Length: 189
Image (cartoon, rainbow, N blue to C red; front, side, top):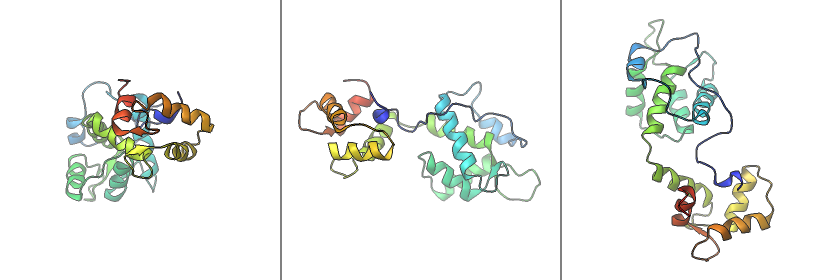
């Protein structure tokens, strides 16, 4: 099967966000960091690193409040200002004592890992369904699938897309419902 119905929120690159940087994290970051090796897949770890690097706009190996909030949003977490500030205070990376709230890669990776591990898989699947349901009809139609395939750069023929729908369309209505999508993503088909 193509990558269209792949695991939501993963990239194809390999790597680990836990490489040493020239900055260290605060003691509160190490206290709240998960003990032992990461529980995330290499793809998830790479996604975290990429989000950090993308939004470290001044490339100083630390991110400020705005960069942090946008990086978390890129990972699928839309936290309120108070939550963001609390996390930043807990993982502050202010080496020079300037009083500014910043976070290094280690602290960011720790926070992102905790948030990812706390996600409800069913909620994630429902959110992924909404990305495929481009028209908001509650069903993934052939038209929706074509649009998503095109946006992902998947070069699939219409016959292949029709076959995908037919394979998972349990009620034979010509589209994939949210419940059918949950079964696909849960491997319960």
